[in-house]
Image 1 (tube, rainbow, N blue to C red):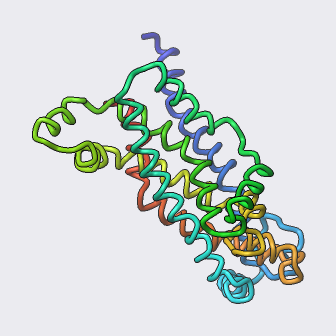
Image 2: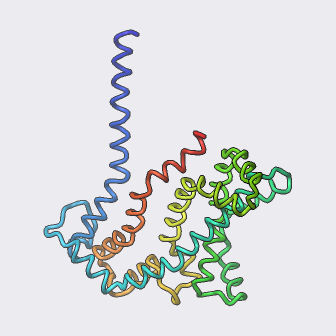
Image 3: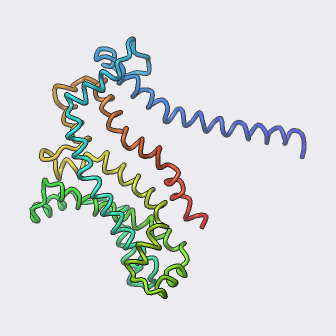
Length: 280
């Protein structure tokens, strides 16, 4: 290898990682820093959000203000009330449907699979959903909101899990059936444990969507049930947070902490779930 070519190759190996890190810092670090420093300022300094440091850090004081005056605790439990059943329901139903679709091959099931994953690209009709929930008596109720989220994200789980199930050797299921295991037992004891990495990935994605949703929640349960994004929307429009950017950014940090902690704990399973289908 010529000496000049070797130098360019070595320089490229150094420059590319540095460029990637700098790009990540610019795209992620600067917005994150803006949120932190703005949430740590007083009202006067935060009136025009910028990257400058506060003259006096009062991050925890702002946390205490939004937690008490912003009524975050009821909104937190409201978010859990609709998110936990939605995620559990969509994972169970989606995994079972994906198992059947992955193990059966026919033209009819291919059409069913195409319809099942069409929800990924087709936006839900909000007006139709609200009218249907009113006809069913579920408008403005947590059960109605749970049904909406399950219908919206079932396609995502089916899409994720179907491809993963196809990588699992069918011989494992056949051996269990020979031993007399029922289809339910085969799914629970054989398939479900193998699906944990990809289900962990789907769980984080769906939790992220539901936890930050304000649009659909506003139409379905707005005014009857508080979730964190709905509560932030309401208080940001009221006198408490009007022009109080330090409190708005402090609320955003507190609202993001549960998912951030969950992601940090489960990041290995998430990465495994994303890559496992490619390496099996």
